[in-house]
Amino acid sequence: MEAFRAFVDMVRDIPSVEQVRAKFAGTYLHIVTYASGSTKEERRQIYRAELALADRYPDLHFEFDLIDRRGYPVIDKEETGKWIERIRSLPNTADAIQ
Image 1 (cartoon, rainbow, N blue to C red):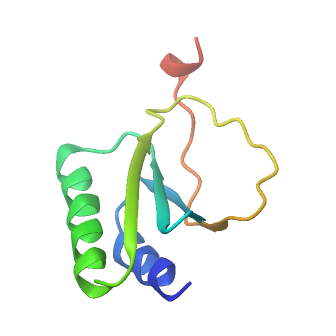
Image 2 (cartoon, one colour):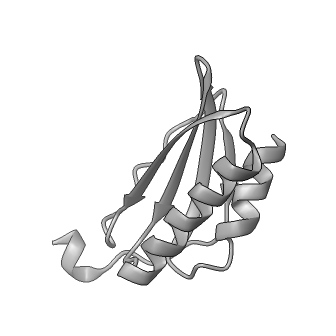
């Protein structure tokens, strides 16, 4: 949980980041960052945070994913066994919905 919180703190101020989810998958901590409409620089910031986390917690094994929904609506479903930090809600775009 400490590593999850540290990662959330690193990406919290990136404007396109909406939420971070994490779950232990075997021996790995799988962290998924959800964004919408991220720029190249914002994605670089997320990747740098991933590297910094791996350096900060060398005894943990990580798997990282970045999902950018690019304005498409989110399909919410009940999540169990995961840590979820909702940072902000970004709007869906009209182009994505059509």
